[in-house]
Length: 122
Image (cartoon, rainbow, N blue to C red; front, side, top):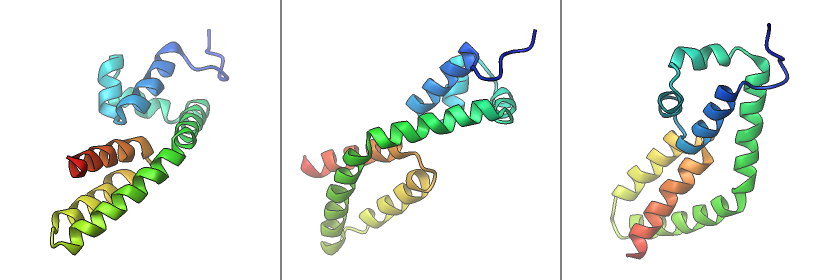
């Protein structure tokens, strides 16, 4: 019997939840016990991709204000660090922009920003 294409399978639901938690395909696949190849087969299913994108957008929107606040705090700290000759801030900023923001993984960026702000405050 063919699956109803309007509903995700439980394993697909679990994968999406874990992917949003871990933010990497590999970790989510490992935790679910599926191969990366299975994930790429799921990516060909319009209903799977639609649900994944919807949940990513929903998660981003839930945390948007916090992300904006943290970005402001980070930018201020980075500016002060660079002004004081600490070139590591430039490298950190470039890493965040490349790895997180460009890939639209807002929660990973938020985690990194929180770590950096905590480091600055201590």
